[in-house]
Image 1 (cartoon, rainbow, N blue to C red):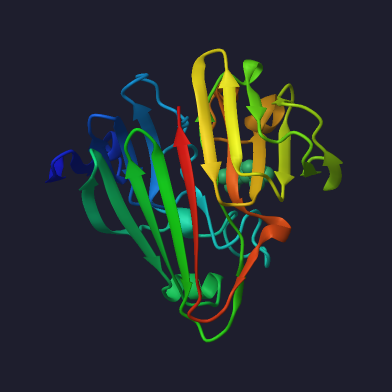
Image 2: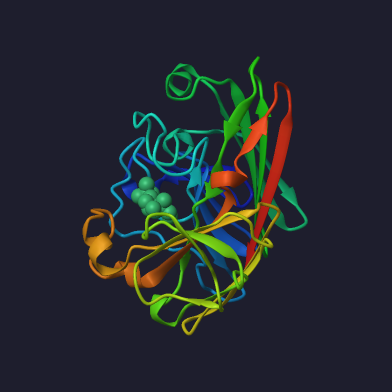
Length: 287
Ligand code: TA6
């Protein structure tokens, strides 16, 4: 059952699952955003007719289960939980966010989503916070992240937009990482330096703590995807053959069709936020 919220925005259950999604359709794009995680699942530009994002065919869309693909938000930590109790990459992508505002701006739609601490988050991460993400669906996809510390104590957080870009991995080249230091997650966190434009021919899992915030993903089967952001870190990931066999939500060989370029504040680029302090980040994605 589809419910129209305003011109160009409707709400429905995704693929007849229990997952509530908002469908945005305007002259520039067709997008799908899940209320769970305020997660963009699809962003199809009308000028190219291509979806910039990859979404796994192996998702089952069970409530609170992380959705593989699109742009999951890793918050308030990136990677494994510190005390090994919480979920990998934090809880933000598993929680249902509140859509607090939808408005039209210069032929685009802006949708605001809010996540605020609750009893469950406090058991996983003992700090009070409010996080608002504003998602602009137009010629570009722009996401703004605004976090405020509502606690009486400072907290340290890391975060990333764990973006899955649709691409042909065998012909993919990532520009914007040249000469940057990175940590190889597959080789005991060894520090190395990127030499050239990055091409992928095996499993890759690299954290670039400090980047220049501008990237281009090239591949034979897509038009270039450009990313610009004021976040410092980038993570590059593809599970390749063997690792993807351990991931039940990646169907056979579908690992060939995406690259993760994840932008945020990760590792030593984690940030401390003092009580009542606010911090803002953005990312622009376009073809
Ligand atoms: O992309 C970096 C990474 O931390 C990889 O190590 C891998 O675990 C990936 O995220 C996927 O994590 P997920 O919890 O979404 O399966």
